[in-house]
Image (cartoon, rainbow, N blue to C red; front, side):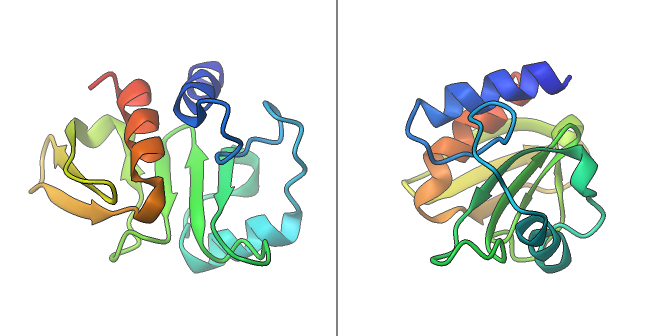
Amino acid sequence: TREHILKAVKFANNNKGEVYSNIETGIRVTEKQMTNAISRYAKGASISEVVAFLDATLFSSGKSGFLVTRRALYSSYNPDLEPLFYSEIQSLELTDTSHINIFFKNSPPKNIYFSIYATIIFNLLKMITGC
């Protein structure tokens, strides 16, 4: 549910102000940022389903970062730009400060680069999926 994901965002964020939700933190995310994120790396997502957003760009353009929806995590760091559907994740392993091994129920595992955000994303996915 949306509430469960917001709770996970708050936990993963650990009050560092790095994962943004316009509902949870009151930070206003512009429609342009969302449009840029969706067109660049979150194809298939819609603005209305975004629960949280992390803009990893220098000038807050939204062209790089993460979108958290009720169904999936979208990441500009994921090389194939496929959404990571929570229901398909079997387990997770933080391999170092920038990579997460993601084991899926019905497909081969992936080692995905998440830059400096790996720990935050790991905690977020762990809490959302229950892994």
